[in-house]
Amino acid sequence: MACVTVKDVPADQLIAAYAALLKRQGKIPVPSWVDLVKTSTAKELAPYNDDWFYVRCAALARHLYVRGGVGIGALRRVYGGSKPRGNRPSRFERASGSIIRKALQGLEAIKVVEKAEDGGRKLTRTGQRDLDRIAQDVAGAFEAEE
Image (cartoon, rainbow, N blue to C red):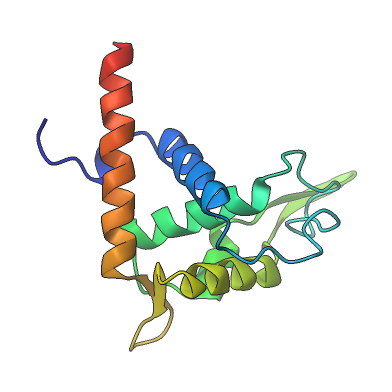
């Protein structure tokens, strides 16, 4: 099989596989409030998935792989959504910055993400290697299905 990168595999499968790895390792410090919090002011309920924090960490790592050097403000816009306001037109609301900040700090603790010189965060060499290895596994499983 040729060299497979993160861009060559479906995002949902890669994120699910990386989130499972992060949970299995157990090295990311999970805040105590993850079972109580909403992910945005636009949401009415907290996430149904009990492992949503690991999924958010994996999605952030993939986003930094594809486009490094982004800060928390830009990621708040990426993970934001439409807030229904009854009879009035919907408006865009940004996601919670605290959740993104804690997820990035957790990824920094395991040396997957580091602060960029020109602001924002970027993936480290070990983080890129981990994501490429998982992309290779996902691509192998994807070809085995077909």
